[in-house]
Amino acid sequence: MSGSSMDGTDLACCDLAWDGQGWTSRILASETIPYGPDMKSKLEVACFWKPEQIEELDRELGGYYASLLNDFHQRHALVPDLISSHGHTILHDPGRGVTFQAGNGAIMAENTGLLVVNDFRSEDVAQGGQGAPLVPIGDKLLFAGYDGCLNLGGFANISYDNPEGKRVAYDLSPANMALNHVASLKGFAFDRDGELARRGTPHSGLFERMNELGYYHLAPPKSLGREWFLDELLPLLNQSTLSPEDLMATVLEHVAFQMARGINDAGIKTLLVTGGGALNKTLIKRLNHYTTASIEIPGEQLIHYKEALVFALLGALRILGEINCLASVTGGKRDLSAGTVHTPKT
Image (cartoon, rainbow, N blue to C red):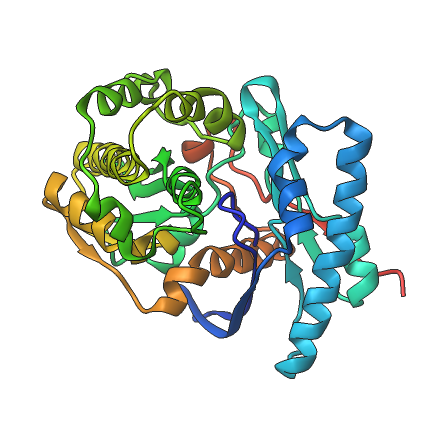
């Protein structure tokens, strides 16, 4: 799993079992391998590249991910049944029928000698869906004890069952992608514990301009991509003359407000919060200010690797030919067993 916050590649070996009534899961081993400066700089700008350059990056990432996996398996004495790879999203504009997650599956299968499932989004986009979010099927099958699940990665996305029992999920707002950008103005990779935001004061004018962005007035299903951040939100941040502390406080307040809006509209009472942003104490404090939902933050392994765990489940469901992409979430024409299966030739 490689998320839009681009902090690195998440690896998780997951034990999944069907007990006749539901799925059980355990994370046996997990770690995050940070991207080097060269790869990170490529990922930051690849959405502007020509197709042939993106294809070259796809092959490079396929080989890179395979080498990470081989090392991970050897160090932890693992012999997995299959690899389920989200890859890294380079392009995501479902309105134009475009989505692409780099990390070539055929190369991964060949270099690891293991079955690989990847490319979970394109089939749904081809049938008119958003191709996102995909984690909600995992929320429904693995975390049904909560009214809703909130993931705080590069973007904040929510998942819950509506009164008819249909799963609903969509991106609420930017999260770490925007917060990490502001942190970089002070030379930080991220705002640890939300300390930078805590020292600042939100600016009402910028707060209101961000809340007026068109995305927030669209009904779900809907999803955000890096292109939206670069085209819509970043110009507002770049026009600001605020100090980094005040800018961080303003962006964080915006994120908390928009997340709470979705939580409150859904009538959620109990909420599981995961993703790196769950460790941002100031963000969680401001979220609590805007919502009365009971927020549970689990242990750090689940905080960091819940998405990887769910993608392991998506891969298993695909191999079994079972539904792993919900039309009620993506807006596609039908539920799918999505993903491309690659079998090693040797």
